[in-house]
Image (cartoon, helix red, strand yellow):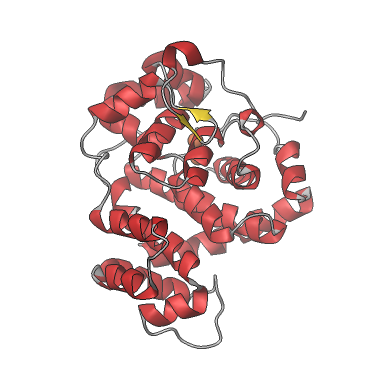
Length: 307
Ligand SMILES: [Fe+2]
Ligand SMILES: [Fe+2]
């Protein structure tokens, strides 16, 4: 076992909380209750629902996906910018969504479309006196970019799945903002004072953003890998053997981006990079340093695309 920050969650109480089990993770009652009590965030943006449904439908076609994306000009524009960006380095210009799907692949475009469709949920009220929803978006976008790079470098899991997992990993914080704005602001202030953010959340909510994120993404009927990353990105050692490389890529990316204080940076305790996660991905500290060094340029590019 390794250095921090592979910190396991304090023991929850499965018999008391125990509700549904999702891909090996119990959705605690406290987290489910809060998600059922919020209305704004529970309703996934319509275009995201449509992309999710096409992704889940074995009969979903390129035409279906292209139609949904082109029905939302802002999303279509993001996807074309992405297809023509340095992330893919394609030799010729991609001029249509159909062409983007052909060149990048159906699954890749599905994942990117869902990521693009989720931008809007990060808008709105502050999450504390010091941080806005945009700071959380900046953090999640940076984690997405870093997780994609780590997954690509490791050849361990689909890089676009790692990207989408990065975008969604902290959605539990958004749910907490809607459910308990004052308590969330207090938990953040406590973390700014040096406390563990997860402990500060549990002390005030009786749950934390990882469990709430699992409950929320379950209500959204998101794929298992996204739900599992929401739940275990701070505690990969507690996860079962499902999607270990997705979890480890996001865990390391989260560490990198919080160490660099990008956006909302308070969720990861101080400590060195998780050696177990590096080993699980077959990466070295030198790999991590290279991903860290390329982050500023990569994030600038991602912000240009997803603005
Ligand atoms: Fe987190
Ligand atoms: Fe995070």
